[in-house]
Length: 145
Image: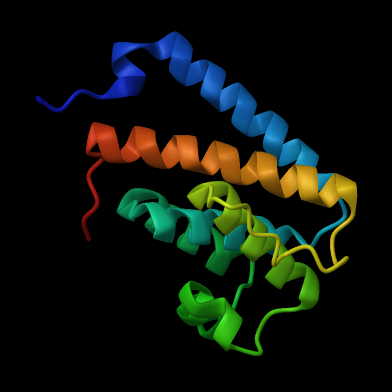
């Protein structure tokens, strides 16, 4: 298969994904979770999907917003560290479940740390991030120094 930039080939679909992204970001901004959780979710989903382009972008975003390098260094194994709060742990676990769609359904994140609004916001954020990862990986977005 030749490399095709999906956004350039079908700009209307790309713009629709951009609009969905904006709606998911708004839902997340209004759900009451710390804004840095959004970046952590985007980074974790991108790690699971192997999207270097999105990993670099969202890691830079998180650092610019004040996220620590220690927390970013261990987000791939968040469950083994003591760096993350209960809501952050629940959001990361839920984002993994949305990304991996495990069967039977895992609900290890469901410890009461997230409200229904927060659960929905994290699910939408993870869904959109999965879509962006697939666009970036399929389009072979360049990632270099």
